[in-house]
Picture 1 (cartoon, rainbow over the protein chains, first blue to last red):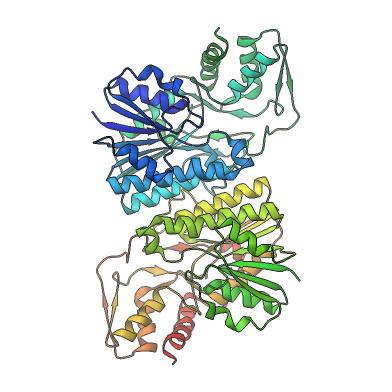
Picture 2: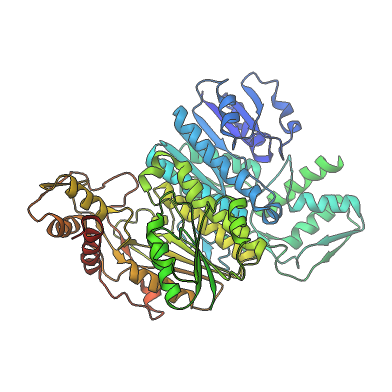
Length: 318
Length: 318
């Protein structure tokens, strides 16, 4: 059994990953600065003797080192910590600089100093920017991210690749799609549920509802990451996502409305884009990952349906 | 006539660019932290009333703002400041973080706050990593830089692209080849000249001498940058280089030996790579730039011959 550190370990994906690793008998140390992650997310794991949690900012070399001084035998770091609030990063790029890139930079320094061999990194489809109708595979170029979030994920990938050249024995880079499920902390489904809780008769949608995106349920995402981590090699780079072309914002709005407030009307905006940095259409190839034997269990539409049910339960208790 | 800021303005390329802009009657403010740039580099420009110099670290927001508070009407920033010592960046990645990436990050913040419209950025062929025999055009992928220097140049490009999406009216990204000429501050020719000054009878070469690289003379580089800056558009991304496949380290060593110490013998190492982060072979397409009407005046071989003569004169006075 291995000993894993998960940064962003009290966040949405970190908490699901921790539960998965613990379920197979591994030891897990979750680290989170609790700027966005919440301690409630991992309360159900704290009875497990193989689980531990420490509050720390892993972009702070001294703080992160102090945490790792207290544990032994770390073999793997799963770097899930990042600023997940893209509009906040556009308003103040220092948020993405610190939380999305300098975390990665500092983790690499610490892994080098401590000879920790395996890094698993949550990158993003946002590194690609806007390719329009072109299908996006891992080797496509040029890489022109249109948000600071995407820029700092690409910066992180670059620094990790250079680290593999210089000292790091193994790195996996996961280019995440939109991931949904619980505990939800942000995202379009949670936004819609909150809006309907506040105004049960009307759901206002940014953009014209034609934006189409692929969604993966967090259970499938965790399976994909752990699958990739078992593939031999020094540097593994994979798009992760469902195999379909995704669902529209209109369809998501209707699914949320049906579950949370069936009598509400839905009002759309006029722009194809919802906000700066939002990519209106996105065709994502996961052929490389499928070729290794992984398959999603849910389509985008099925993932949305399950996540809507989970999030309505989380937020409204029904 | 425009008012230009050149960061790294006391460095090799910055000083040549300053002279070119001044020659056309533009105003130039050179900014340099003098960590690698030298004040001697620009002494010959200080008599020009259109030229000014300030010592400042442009990754330091307060310091860079204080410099710009003293001037008016800045239209263009030419961001040439970076850590040019790749092995130093591998030994301590914080050097590249600060000098190569956080400079870019801070300059973008300052340009946003001051509504400065035009950024011209010295990126690098190092963002591409090792493509072996594949010809490298601007749209190739995946981008897997193998040095921290290349990683932080790619990080800079990504942040600039996101800035163009959010607020910046115009950015040019120049992917530099190896650039040679005077005032030389680093690089293989200068290394060889120094070695022969110390041991006139023998020139020890890292690697087996078969590494082949394209070299551009700094005069051609400055012409290319200024040519690209006149192309309309919001975001211009160009490889810059000669049109040939380059020259070998062996050929460079022989050219330096012939100019500096004709009776010396040359001793090669055994590895195809000279150091970590060095790419052994590199085929660089400049078709996009050629298609816009620019042409280099010198081949790689001619550039090496001219630069060797210039650098031997600079270092040995003959």
